[in-house]
Image (tube, rainbow, N blue to C red; front, side, top):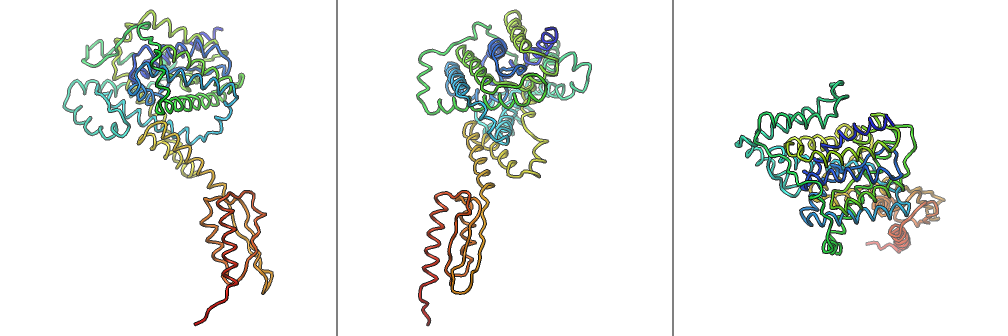
Length: 477
């Protein structure tokens, strides 16, 4: 128990600035991020699934949450999160959790990379206390104007310096081992930025606080009517897919960090769904399992789920006893934390080796990331999944032609071997068209392990036309 108490305090210190930062970046009151962290500890933490994984608001959902709040309001956000939670529970009950392991890792990495790019682009505006455009392309296109506006505004330059200093502390703090053991880097960076802001009375934007109870806004009956719209249903599916995939991939990573009980994916999906259902009922942010907090929990020596439950209790105690402390935190410092978090979502080091060894997987990753930046989260993930399916179909569609000549006057024996799909049909027909046009053929397809309808029809038609042409009388001039 002593180890679990110590680990819970470490996780609490890591989670506190991230909960607040994710909420502010999502365009909702800071307290809603704390509520999601509390539910992640006190509700999801109690349930079976993964013993050491920690749940809470995640940077990976920030972009989608911001778009949802902008489109449907806080009441609509509660409905979305509640519906996603119910869907996760149903999927867990139907034992679909294990199937998330079948999702291409490149799609997940591309999803996180796209989220990271959009997150960084949006938080660059917050670094200068400026309002970010709503769409990903507009955020990128507006960066030039942001630079010009910032250089001509002393208040913006002050906020930018504060945010850049936060990113620098986040990058360098882990190298100071004594300091890293005393305080997690995100908390140290936010505390230093807050101390400088208060000491020098810097004219920068700070976190606005409403109070924990005042921030709880359960969705009303009218908010549920939006579920009849295609757009809202698509957002529910996006929440469900992304939150579930991120949680279960995180569980697989956490299992590699300790020797305790392995994760039951279906039970973990039910636990995540229960947490999201409660968060939706309270009008809070959606939750996922978060690898940063989970790895900190394991590294701090946690033994049982008590550590993650207690971390939720510490968050509740802080939110109830010291809400005014949040008003001292500069928004630029939280933006710096999220810029750093967004950068860590982009697999910069992994992309080079992936390109050299598995180029097709690298293409799937890049397509998913770019699609998310150019369109939106849901369409980007769907395009990434479609690209992964096409890539797999292409790689498994190996087909070749073998020809045997039994002698003059007899048809050529042509065997088609492998997997014949429409993706390989043009090349297959080119090989067949190269056969002598004046010899009949006997086409043998029994060597095919798979042939789809398009290929089967095309091969049959080609054989009939070829033999008809080969036996037709020749006309001489």
